[in-house]
Length: 349
Ligand code: G6D
Figure (cartoon, rainbow, N blue to C red):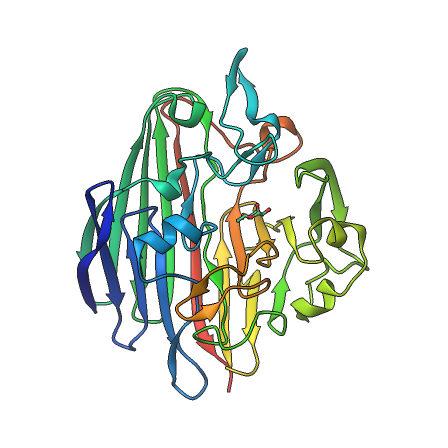
């Protein structure tokens, strides 16, 4: 196992460090202190060709100018909160309204846009970097001083895991995720429409025109949202389903996950042979197929475009504070939030 570190750039005069975790198989995961952004994940294809499988940039400026959360840890609350307002114990709170009059992904300066402290830990069979941040009481309108730890660990068996931990001195909301855009073709050779997805979910959330959950939980049966058996992303994107039209023919929906987390999410690219298996203890996952990616910038020389990458944002459910029948994202005072998501990379020959 190896760890490489170098200066990646500066944000408002503050240096930003890039850390690359490398295992004995040659898999690499690079991340930076700014937003805990994962900038590269290098894994082999079926012929052993090692290529990058996430959307990311080589400079801080590009992230600040163009990035729709590429690789970032998103929080305090991932997803949307209607009107950006909520009540806790009779106290009303107003968050930043940064998306169509609603709150999205922690606001104007969420976890993706702050500099985290970091420390590295090397081991014989795994190596880690731990990012820490103190989100002050009132930051983006949230109550409570929230201490957050995010631990990235790479093992010698090509398993990358993210462990999240948070504790607050006041009751607050916490729903954190990682917003990496995956593209298993390698170095963005193709888009993700021919990727095959298996998602062991029986139901998904109906969205309104502002992409806010209506509260209705819909069955996937007989719809383009049924990924219980492996299917191409393209199948769904050509569907006329009203919920697909709403999201520009792509996917941008939260799915409810079952309690059995064993190999519940599997993404495959037949041409490269790469397989990504995701296992999480979170109750939901948002499948977002990069439907809103604009084409006015390049990503390591490849013109950005719709469907160039897809996100599988394991998390609680968006707008859960307004839907008591959803799993709760309320964190009590001094209660410890803990969650783990594993990304296991392999190949099919
Ligand atoms: C759009 O609706 C989508 C979100 O789900 C996504 O996270 C964001 O773009 C990057 O707002």
